[in-house]
Image (cartoon, rainbow, N blue to C red; front, top):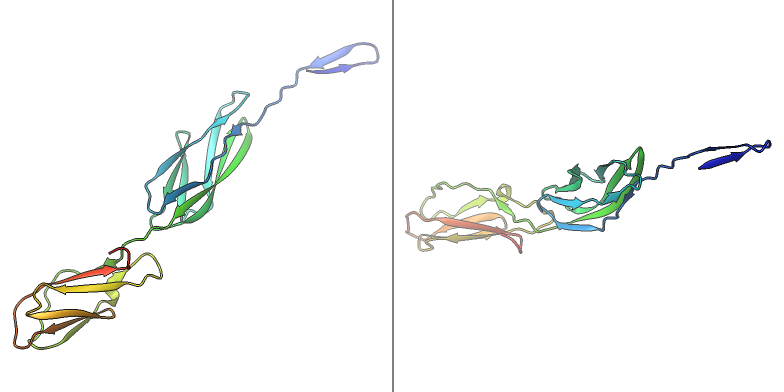
Length: 193
């Protein structure tokens, strides 16, 4: 209540309403592994004036994780094969007044398996002829700076043996031998294959 007294002894008063901003509970650092499924963070906000609270949220780096508000919760959607530390800004607004909280979201790196993209098929080679096939364009790994190794296995080394020379598959038929055999290839980054 605001009161004013005048020199003639009269007073005037009026009620002044103060609208308080909402309060938003802090969110601690969130940590999740790369390639995790979407997850929710429950928001907790109050407004002493009982005004309706609305939320908005932004990610400092959408190449690592996207964020949205769904049913009063933050939905975090990590981007596939992305990792790093980002800042998420949360705003709670009531009756035109906004309060902001930031929290860290740490997407930790995981080791992705390398990929060997080579189809099945038949290779015809002449008896006794050493054959070399480059696999450089057939191996990949989304994790950078990985040393990849390929391990070949022949299902019948009495017909031909197989080995790798860097990323070149070397097929060496046995002398005076012919027939069909299969080659299995496994690519590894030392931890995953």
